[in-house]
Length: 399
Figure 1 (tube, helix red, strand yellow):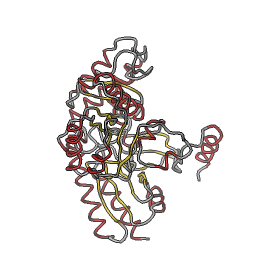
Figure 2 (figure 1 turned 30 degrees about the horizontal axis):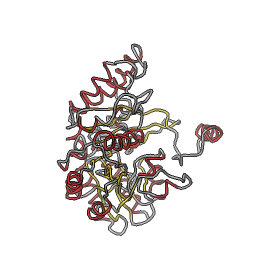
Figure 3 (figure 1 turned 90 degrees about the vertical axis):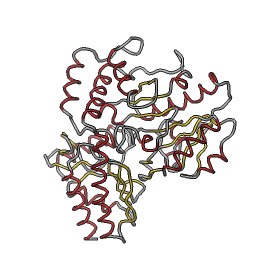
Figure 4 (figure 1 turned 180 degrees about the horizontal axis):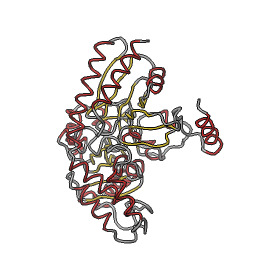
């Protein structure tokens, strides 16, 4: 362990709460699809800050906008009209069927806002005492008390009881279970099109379309968490667009400002009427600096057709990893994903493989103990993916 890293690690342990199981790596700078440690060694980044830096690290056009905006207007609060926020809403809404946006600071806040909007819409607009939100096993929606309760993984709830009421979790992919769980108290159903933290598990298209139809039939809001899947990650601007469904509410964050903290809640005009002045708010959400950065992010994504690139390069990567699975059928149990959101499930606990890949200069995530999760920048060169596939093949071959 290098002295500089050891010193930083000691300092961190003295002052930061122990909430993160950090990688044995300190990053000093980043560019494109490369990270650099304190000693100047470079790593191929296949994580992008957990699906955040979709344009790659330190994109020069975004950096220029941030520097320019920081000299003009950073923050005044949402008591004031701000052109940057309005332009962002216009651009973001133009990518979907929704009519109104609310800006916040994170994915958890966006999902919290979606839950509040669903409940308030049902009570104040439809006049129904409906407040329950149905979610799926294996899901992940955030770490606030409400969103961790909505999450379909018990491990993140340990120690936080009593949890808020009004959430019901049903088995992944079981439409009959959703139907059986719906009551006159059901306000909405919240899903991820691809469960990321749950192990990169895409929902079957027939299930998604059936769920949307069931929600319409029962007068329940169809809600989609696009925190990880949105902003071109899966090969469409929004993952729900693969299945030609139109959520009443959907959320995004992570890649919205390419590394700056921003989230958004989008809803149809009808459902957005559930909020009125004073019913929901945030101090920092949609500030001029972050909005200006996000405007540039959306502009670049559409100009460079990064949704199409994610699909093409994702298909290429899936081909590489499927070939690896054929070579090592006893070591790779499955390869799955959508666009550049890919999971390589090993047939054994993957900690040793993950560590060896890091030692060879490749940053990936290990989730659910066995799944190597890849969320690279959407701008990543194909050569980087080929290098990773070769390295993974060598690591598996040496086991």
